[in-house]
View (cartoon, rainbow, N blue to C red):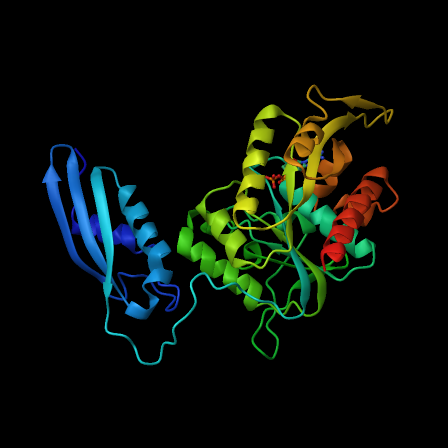
Length: 356
Ligand code: ADP
């Protein structure tokens, strides 16, 4: 039978960070009244988290996260956490709940998202960003895929970002765009274990503490999926729209539908769907052959009432250039693939400008 004690619970709670203070709730002595009631098979856990009463409502996600992490401990039968008043620190100003992060010099922020991993979301985000720059725009690319940052690899980024005089990180310039990724700051594997609130503060840092400068568009490569983390990100960032990447297979389309639903829930317009690995382009003869469920995204886009932005083939050159850190839209600008990405980029930009 699993043995749970106060320490097991406190250890789990060390992963929950107070957003204002940047330290965990155990280190800040905010966990009070911890009780464990043993029962056959485990224990029921109750505790309170002391917070500034002016922040009560804004800290509801923190309370939920605390419950969630304790609930994951083997043998915890039930968990209940409540927020309780903590003596307010006079210097802390009240903050609005889920306040959006603003970026002054950036005209439009767009998300590239997918309902599940492995559909080519990051490859599409990189090539779309590079293609927008090739179309004459000032473009930034933010890798918000905290759990599996792949932009450094796909863009061939090396080294750590430098700090400017204002102590802001200078984005890495490559292929005509400015890029920043959590993968440039921490070890790729270290970021895998991050939990909700830490993910949020990392995102805030990547947006606010980076000297993005003047940009026409900032492309955000979102973590795959439609869970709480993605939803909160979509809420926190002032997104002008979202591009959903999907493969033509039915199962991926169900996920794409969830992606569309998630952004609609938080009133972020869907710019359209990109069908990736849509058909097969023979590397020898250049002949196109359709994959068994080719066209699925087109049908789905129609059903959902969103545009189909384009179809990207399953193509060896896309994969090789992507995995080698030399995105095809930048390194083979005359190829049909690069032209395809530029056409998608132009459509996205036209939609953004129409909305202005
Ligand atoms: P995600 O961000 O959705 O997890 P990636 O962009 O990392 O997906 O792509 C997953 C793998 O598929 C990578 O090896 C990438 O090179 C490959 N890939 C992506 N798009 C294509 C494509 N159109 N043709 C061939 N391979 C692709």
